[in-house]
Picture 1 (cartoon, rainbow, N blue to C red):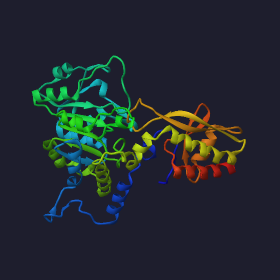
Picture 2 (picture 1 turned 30 degrees about the vertical axis):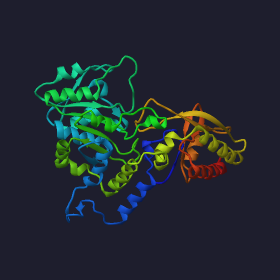
Picture 3 (picture 1 turned 45 degrees about the vertical axis):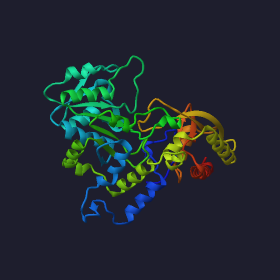
Picture 4 (picture 1 turned 180 degrees about the vertical axis):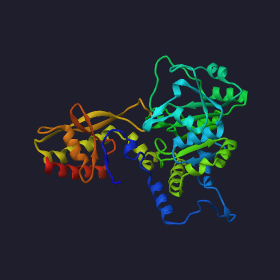
Length: 389
């Protein structure tokens, strides 16, 4: 692996490593990597402990859950939860929530791998509480709700609230679960971003288990976080699959440091979280970068490549807030003697790869994720490209 410049317009880019970690998380990971740590050792008693005790108190405080555990990604979290709660039994889920995300992750496939039996109800755009109620039988093991993480159905739509499903489950003695996908611990609308369901709100609804990602909106290392009722979390810990899916000390260190930053939500939070800073960066700041960078690049290319500043739109990425866009500013490069595809390849194959996008036959460099370091890298790469163009 080597550093690249992400100028694609997709802030949390799965192919480019997803979230950038906070300074606190990076320091915690380095400390854990270079030292022996109390990963599964209870210092107070001198006996073996459980690695969940490091992150669990933080998740209890931030979400209101009874207990929690952490696995290597949200797909693993869903797999472990389904197998523990409903192996050999039917899982009722809305037809409109049988999603597929990047890498061909499909809810029906994961359910089959878990040993649970899919029982879909409703239609693509409308599912009612009565659809779930009428589907309940003696082999029903779980009522599942899946947050659509990379698409949105608009118009004539209907789906039961999580509170309604938990009440229905309680009436029939059936557990409930929600896969939130990205997951959010704070109200994103407070920072000018669209609303995303809060994990704490779901726990307050009475749901038994909630799963979500440790990176994406949370801004930590890649992990699958499972929170909810202690009864189910304890069963997951005892599941033999847990050992195959658990995370190591580096992920726990980075996640723990990330969660601790959420304990104090104030005006500095956008500075503490690199991804939140990138999501909320002002257009004025991006214009300043564009103006300076244009001035730096024009002498390098002369008349061979025209450079303009243009308004554009980016996205959060990795399935988070799928239909919402982020206003952004881009440098648009138009080569006069060769194709934009060739120019993109030259930028991509330089010593420091700069990854942009092709649009309308032009090479676009979205600047939402370009800061002082990346700006210097772009100039260095452009200098190299200009010599061979």
